[in-house]
Length: 104
Length: 410
Image (cartoon, rainbow over all chains, first blue to last red; front, side, top):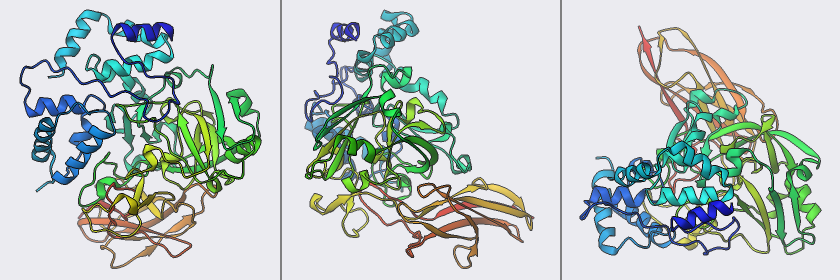
């Protein structure tokens, strides 16, 4: 445990507290590092969504714009992806609607 | 793409297996460290929990981080679901303790509106009078993929349901031991799984009346063995008839509250449904949402398999399960002509009140063609499964009839 924490610190990570932490004490999730100067919407979407969960979750859904906007709002406000800037949000939502929108 | 950073990391680290073993050996910090690394794209997601997927052969994996998976209906044919075929719905990463099957240091604490807070070890818990019963556990989002228009979330089809045998202690015995204060109205459950992102720890609760129900268990065995890592080792709640999120996995703490539990997963649109029917695709205001609780009447066709082929006139055994939340299954009817004619099935009563019932009938289709077998269950209160799925914004409590395609050849 001590070694584990030390290790995590070496890597500059926020180590999760022991379970049972009070509400709101969890830090924002780490923003993913993208190794491209100007990532396209596909890279941006995949990298940002995959910061927390499998991209499979996104790929399995077929949602309209209003619902993807709702999802984005929750990710930014409740699930620690507050680093997604408003312009990036627009790019990602457009990409999601185009590729994972309702089947025609 | 993502591979760059991972590849660079792997080059730096050399033997990945040894590294993982080291992290695992570090104990409780390892999960957090792993999660952090995964979160930064420094570790393949596959490193986190994927090794556990081998314990669920045949599972349709919806997401691998966190692990979420269901089984095709024909794989749920057993009267009592084997542990290997119990669906998995995770919100976070599987605790190291569960992976290592290590009960050392685990306690279940009972706090809040009680006169004597408790911290029970696994041994102490297992010394209390035990109960063994089968119980249906079903993810609240089972059937979400069948909603139209489509709703957000894991796209469960029909297989996020199971009926296994659970051994444990009645929650009410533990609550009585702790002594409920008169202000106690609700429970708040917490587990050892680490949330993804910066979500609050996954936590839900149930009213005290449900907590005191004799069938609500703190379970430490599934089908006579220790709980599988993916299903909550060492201890989980089993809250029969109610949506699965009430049955907290990796349970280690229950806080008795003097108000309805107000965690992230109890409020807003989480595990909530509109108080009245809404237009499909619309979103009512938060104030009009109510907590999803008990399941309604439902059935599953487990034989034949979808798209099975038979010859004209051949006898076909159709069977499956039916369950009704807190009610009792009364009958199950089947149709092969889109609901014009219905045939009664033979119903076998459940092993106990919280288990599912089984139904079966033989039928033959005299002419070649593409058919659908429909099953429709009824409960003792006169409720039946709907033909079309009533809609709600997050796709909870789906119980539309099961339609199974079969092909009849000449």
